[in-house]
Amino acid sequence: MKKVILVLAAIGVITMAATTKMSSLNDKVIVTNKITNEKYKACIEACEEASEACKKCESKCSKDKDAKMAVCTQLCKDCVIACKAATKAMSTNSANVKSECAECAKACEKCATECDKFTTDHCKKCATDCRKAAKLCNEM
Image (cartoon, rainbow, N blue to C red; front, side, top):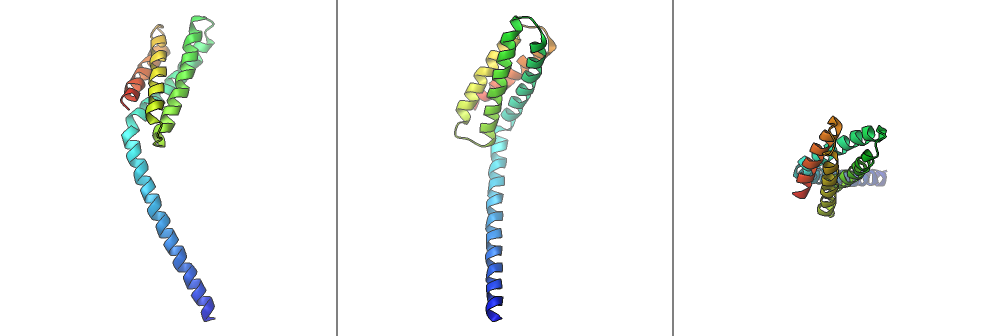
């Protein structure tokens, strides 16, 4: 009977120690993620806004049968992909943050330049949001 109690007590101590250690590790991860998120917060938000503007622009421009809009549509698609990659890199504090942000900035600038050629509200918003994301990505 004493052996059973000792074994149960040992299991309890081990469980408490493991739980405490895991809690400490989780706290470190949360703090690290919070610092990372603060470091990249503005850029992540700008990339997300640009991505949403590009999706709307691409959707509306793809409905237009004008061949001139085909370039706009493709550049919006490319920009969404680049923004998502940069956002993921920043969110995970990847070693590739600088290169992903540089690619995102290029894609955003191309998209903004193309969207500026048109007078529609969605193209103008897309251009504005893409330029903001490009500026912040270039600062990474």
